[in-house]
Length: 268
Ligand SMILES: NC(=O)C1=CN([C@@H]2O[C@H](COP(=O)(O)OP(=O)(O)OC[C@H]3O[C@@H](n4cnc5c(N)ncnc54)[C@H](OP(=O)(O)O)[C@@H]3O)[C@@H](O)[C@H]2O)C=CC1
Ligand SMILES: O=C(O)C1=N[C@H](C(=O)O)C[C@H](O)C1
Image 1 (cartoon, rainbow, N blue to C red):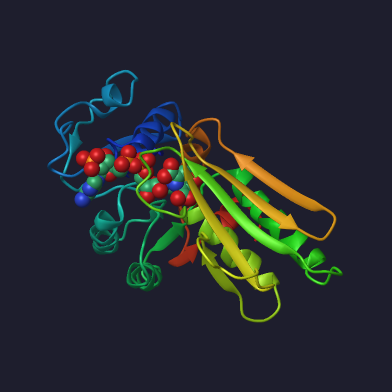
Image 2 (cartoon, rainbow, N blue to C red; image 1 turned 180 degrees about the vertical axis):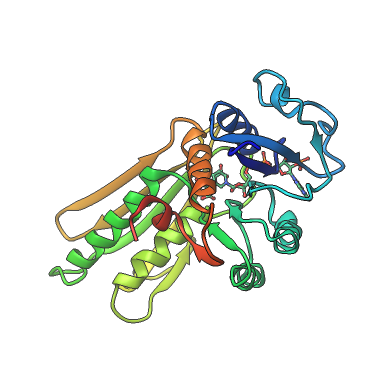
């Protein structure tokens, strides 16, 4: 029997699902065994490899769930995530969740599921983004007591098709930065009208939607007299797809638990 990881992809017809299929097909340690999307998707029944722009894989896009896979990678929609989590728990299948825009109830369900199966859950699978999150925390810790104070704002840019705002990554940047600030932090989403002066303990979020941008985040640390901006930008979607595949490999043999990309990348 093959030692290859048997990979199932949820949301396989989507922008990210296709890149996961294309990159996983090149990986000698992986065999793609299921490509799942919802029954109404117009590509159901087509070969997942051809849909991904590579050679046929003999794996058809299907709404049906496999009885077994070594791991599931999910890049779908919030509405589809609950079912995916439930199916993976029932099948005791390790799961990588990359979908963003989840609500608090869904996040709690993921935490509960992680008591039963190993799950990597992260709003960005990119190495560069996760490293930048650590850098942003370090800068915050260093600047929070600077004379005159520091104002922190997060600007994210994504393609016009993105369904959620601000990005899951921007929200995670904000959570991680807030952990390093003193006192209660107010999260402010955009500004309009008679806002009054900016208060010191807030983090601002700004979501830009333009063209085909595959994802870019700028964290601005504004002080009196000078400013730091850190920018992390994807050139294409493969940074996320390859990160998800690394997470899928990381989960092999892991006990139940909720893991992050910091764990996968050794940044914890
Ligand atoms: N963590 C990370 O690193 C990254 C996360 N993302 C996130 O991943 C998600 C997907 O992004 P993207 O690929 O661009 O989006 P797409 O809309 O291109 O892909 C989503 C896919 O899921 C399908 N889908 C819809 N409903 C269901 C369902 N009920 N069951 C199964 N599949 C379903 C969609 O089908 P249909 O088109 O017919 O609706 C589509 O094929 C988003 O939440 C995005 O924010 C994206 C990039 C990186
Ligand atoms: O929808 C996208 O494209 C992306 N979504 C993720 C997010 O919301 O943070 C990650 C990445 O920035 C691309």
